Image (cartoon, rainbow, N blue to C red; front, side, top):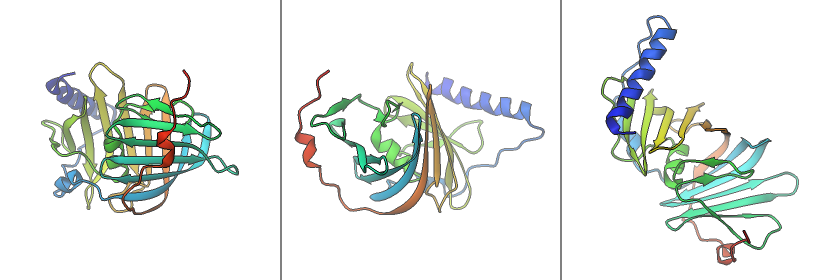
Length: 228
């Protein structure tokens, strides 16, 4: 989908919404929207993950620079699944195995087989309530920003003071659209993210958020690939 077609699609969403609701006027972009495009500071966060037939799983996410670490626990057994994303791509391991699963490029994987069509640095930015650089107001679509994101096009609906992301739509070229709705904010940080991509549904509910240190690669990154 070209950028022009993508913007036309956003305008179409507004027309449909106006047809379903009476006299709806979308608010303009908040004055501080540019702040949303600043790189997020390193962070560590605890979430409750609902996905793939499992509910409220304790999930720790750490992010620093271009690195993202995710660990999911299944009580009472502790950490059952871990993933590491860096410039080389992503790998994951499952409790009890001594081998690694290589993850598809440009995807954030979750236990149970869910795959979000988004690159790890962008996913980390959304968790922090941020957007990538280069976003700009979408013509003819008040309250929306549009720009490129990796191999796709990104649109974000923003509002509030401080400026917050409320909805994000990511469209890959010829691929599945991913929709993320963000609410229950703490400042700019969303307290809940609900992501939909094809048949995959993922919900992250924030429990605790704080600044994080630089990340050190875990020793298990040296393990051999799992047999296919």
